[in-house]
Length: 58
Image (cartoon, rainbow, N blue to C red; front, side, top):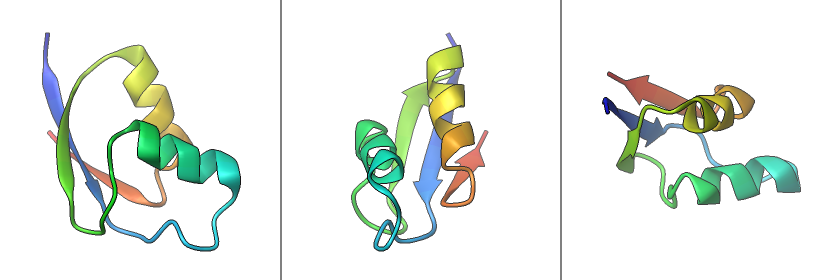
């Protein structure tokens, strides 16, 4: 399965609870942190919900 890298580029401070939990579920904690995830429809959906806060590096 393909892998994608997800980078947190905006702070989760001031965002609603659902968005904060989605960021934490992706494994992101600090701005600038990059995590490698499987490229699945579930992960893509999570990224789409917080696309204004993350950057996808393919």
